[in-house]
Image 1 (spheres, rainbow, N blue to C red):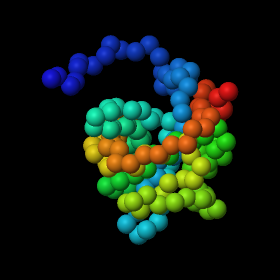
Image 2: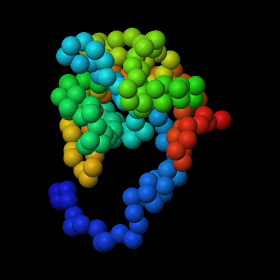
Image 3: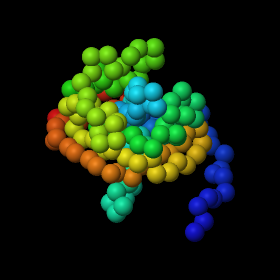
Image 4: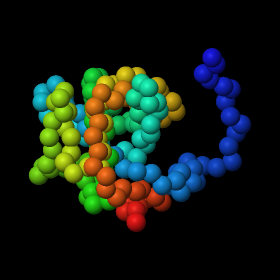
Length: 167
């Protein structure tokens, strides 16, 4: 199977225009968490989450090549994708802000592999770091879900650069 194609034709828009167009697609919001070798935790806010396959159970998310946490997430064997509910926009902002400790005062529990699961999320997926695909200015992470749980609640939505609840 051919997995690459020739380059697309020259585009007639800039990065800012492309970002604004992408912002018209409403997404859910997640926090990806993992544990470092020294026992500390790392987490980041991501809206680039999607299902890939039911059998085997696979999900994906992406991370910018320039992210400080790239070596951590490429090197760790496991991570947890925490799906935020409508009341957790403050957590998304906290984990997206540099220079603060987002774990301060945060309630969490540990997965069977010792990864942090944020309490109160709508769903969480403990993933084996199955594969990574560099594309453009990001790396696409494919995780094989080893365990998941959910608690139905209204979702946190990100649209046009703003957080909102649904309903």
